[in-house]
Image 1 (cartoon, one colour):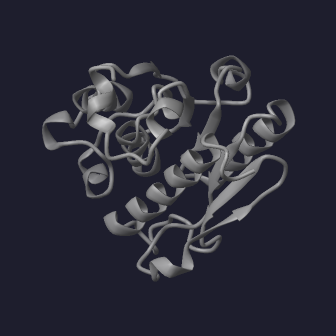
Image 2 (cartoon, one colour):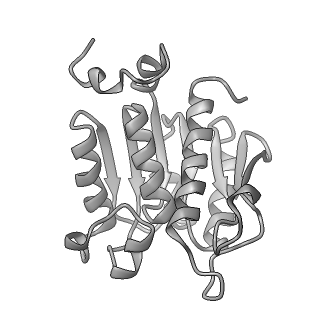
Length: 206
């Protein structure tokens, strides 16, 4: 057993060995992305690429995996620090850019074993999903639709989407000023998104 692997001994048998060899791409390091990253690293996923262009703001702290002394830092740099405290051996690549139709092809590594869409805005979600489904159809894609507000968490689920995609959420409560976001519902959705991805990486969902 390697030095790092002793911290994953509570995983089901055989899981750590498989996840240490897997690479995940996370688009966005906000409420979804930061929570998904934490869950994946704690599960033992060995390699992450995280892309985000934003800085940590005070309003982020109700649902995102950052701390008060990190306000003003680039999210990808703050998240890199936090993830390294969990797993110093993590292979992590961060990109401080906004994903657009002009650069998306160069940003997503073809070697990724799975892709997580973790954006706030519907337009960005649609652009990202359309690209992945058209250009990277063989890479599993886990999307989110509907996580805002105070609706019951039992309305949030997972369903199979087009091609090799899965959709997590209630497909109804989008983020806007009226709905707002609450830590528990965002974290619940992100945990379900991460768990769906872990099952896919282990060959349990196809």
